[in-house]
Length: 463
Image (tube, rainbow, N blue to C red; front, side, top):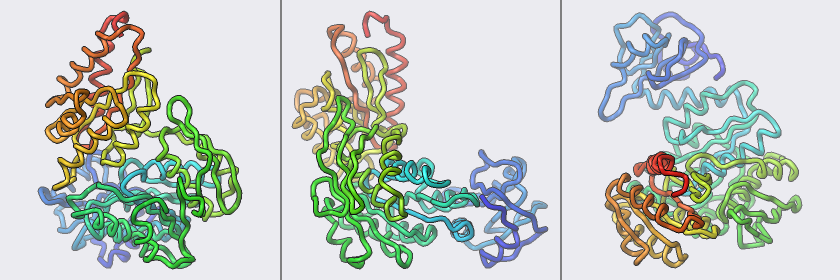
C-alpha cells in the first residue's frame, strides 16, 4: 500500500479525524492478522459489532481506526456512517493515486484461472497486482486495491457476487480499462433467481468500463447477444473455442495424456501455438480471454505465449498429483456448479485408469438443487466414469442417477473407507484416478487429506 495521511483519508471519507494525524501504510479488517502500524477498519456484520474489537486491534499493534461509533481508546479515529463503504472509498483512493492499467473480470466459471493467466502474462511486462485467493467481493476488492504499490503498472481484479448490484459497486471502485465476462452458468442461483438474473448481475461490469475502454465477451456463451446489446459494437472483443469469426479463436486443439491442451491461438495480430500446463478444454477458453485482455494493453504474442505456457494451476482447481504410484488425484475442490463439474469430468476421462468422481454437495442452487445434482450423475454415466462416490444429502442425487456406478455416503470418513477398500482390493497393477469436486461448503479437500493419511498407513504392497 502507498503511504497515506490519516487526515487525507478522513477528507476522502467526508469525515473528520479525531486525534493526531499520522501516516498509514497498511490497512486491516481482521484482528487476527493485524501488524504494528496498521489502520484497523471495524467492519460490522449481522451478528457482530466490530467496534468492540478496536481495543484488541490496538493490542495487536493498530495505531488508528475507522469506526462507526467513537471508542474510548486513546488512538486517532475516523468516525463514519458505514465502515464497509469507507473501506471501498479508501481502496478507490489508492487505485486512483497509483493509477495502474486495470483489467476486471467476472463469470460463473474460470475467473480465478483466467486472472492467473492474465497476471502471468502482464508480470512479464511490468509489476502487476492480482486478486489473491477469493478476495473478489465488496470487502475483498477494496482490500486488494489497498495492496497496490507505487511501482505497480497493472492490476488484475477478479469480481464476484452473490447478490445484485455487488459487481456494479466493485466495478465502480476498480475503474477498469478492460473488462471480461467469461461465461454464465448455474451458480449462486439463490441470490439471482435464475440464469437471466446471473447474466444481468455479471453484465453490471459493462457499465463500469472507463471511456475508451473495451469489453471482452465469450462468443460461445448463450448470453453473448444479450451482453453485446449493452456495449457499442466498437467497444468489444469476442473470443471463441469453436467459432473462427471471433476476434480471438482456437484452432487445431489437441490434448496430451493428462488432458493439457495445445492449440493454435488465432488473433488479429497474428497466430502462435500455445501449450498449457493446465488441463481441460475450458482452459483453452480461459487462455483466449486472457490473451484478448493482454493484447488490449499492447502485449505482444511472444509474451502472451510465454506467460500462458508458464502459468501453473492453483490449489483446488484441477490440481493433479499422485498419492501413490497407483493413485492419482485431481483436486478441483475449490468450488462447484454444473458446468465446472462437467468440465472436470471431461478432464477425468482423459486418463487410462479406473476413474472415480468423488463429489460433495453443490450449494446455492435454490430450487434447482436436485435437478443439477441429477444432471451430474447422468453426465458421469454418459462419459463412462467408472464410479461416482458422493458425500452429502444433496449430492446423493448424483449417485442415484449414475446407475450402478453410484454410491452415496453421509460422512467423509465413510466415503474414504469405501475408496480405501476399492483401491486395496483391486489388482496391484490397477491404476486409479480420483476427481474430487464440491462447493466450498463441502470442504472436499478434507477428504483428500484424509485419504492421503489413510493410504500412507497402508502397507506398500496394498497400494
